[in-house]
Image (tube, rainbow, N blue to C red; front, side, top):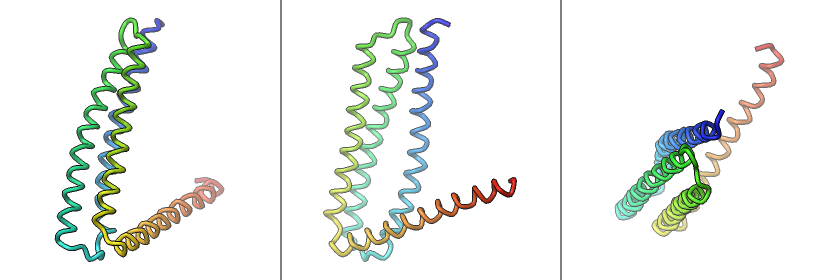
Length: 159
């Protein structure tokens, strides 16, 4: 096996991870929208607040989409460099640095949306949101605990 063949496997793995990450992100986005809707129900949002929240989220989504596309392109460039006959470490390092930069922009965008949304909500609404989030965390933790406790029992029963 030539060194180049080993790099092709690495490049394919990078590509698979990128596409898998995008699919998981899409599933998470749908789940997050559902959670956001559940959390915001009963907060007594004004029409102006709802409008501002929608605008902030749309801006966030547009930027995230832009970043995800750029990230996908950079991952493809990395795959191509690693799959080349003679990958150059300096080129790989430059692409990886660009990927890290885009990942940082994704994080910055997330922080921006959180801060913008917090500015829209009243102190009481933020308190209610925190309470609901805590309730959801406890519910999820409870479900995980039930799953964990069932596994040893199933194993002991020979299932």
